[in-house]
Image (cartoon, rainbow, N blue to C red; front, side, top):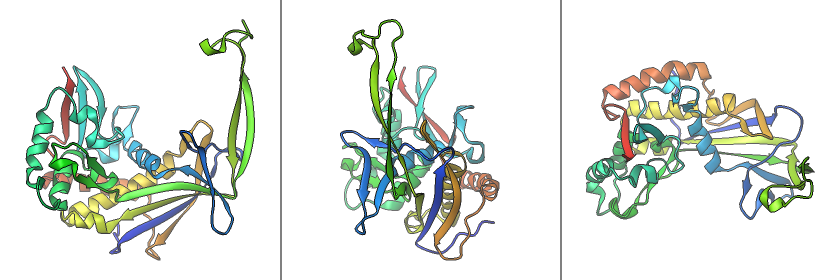
Length: 312
């Protein structure tokens, strides 16, 4: 059985490097481009992957694109599937705003929305009771308890229902330098064609980066998970699931972009001191047992996949 430390948070760092060559492409932001900055002592830094992006990537490891289903080790977790007629449109794991997705709450079929409103009815007035909110969210989308949620609909307790992330991460690079390059989109038929319509030769600028070090940082907030008051078994499930997401991302999910394919060189647990991060094999052995136990205890809806119809 995996040892779950009795500490407020688990802090993990991982040393990364480009899988091939020395250059990599960071995330970009509208009207900003790459997020470069300097530390107070003058070190040149670069945000490779934001907390928002890492949250999405930690969710993406849960989904098996080849089989269009949950990854095998976490089969049986609760989530919401959105259908349009007879086609699966999306789900709460892949949606950027999870259960607050407009495809879930703004569809023509209001059945699920009304059910959610009824089950959260006790939170309409007064302080939001965190365990009640967590219990309802776990029933339909247990990942919300790890990745956070903001139910911004005014019809749901005045838009006050939110949970912060209890697992989070980001990637930054230190000692960065710019690798400027470029190219041309060639039109071999008409090089002088109208570029506004996609014709002609189009030169372009490209900016990549090098770095002395690339590090990924992760935090698992055990205090927040315990504050849900869902019981020891649920705490263990959520903690093991959070660590599995981190392990899976570092082992399998570091192809962030075409020009940003990284590998994990080493992993260090910063807190608690002396605790060893479980292996992927250990995590994937225990997860099915924990999920089955949670389902038997009624933590998830029955069936665990709740179907919402966006339109008929």
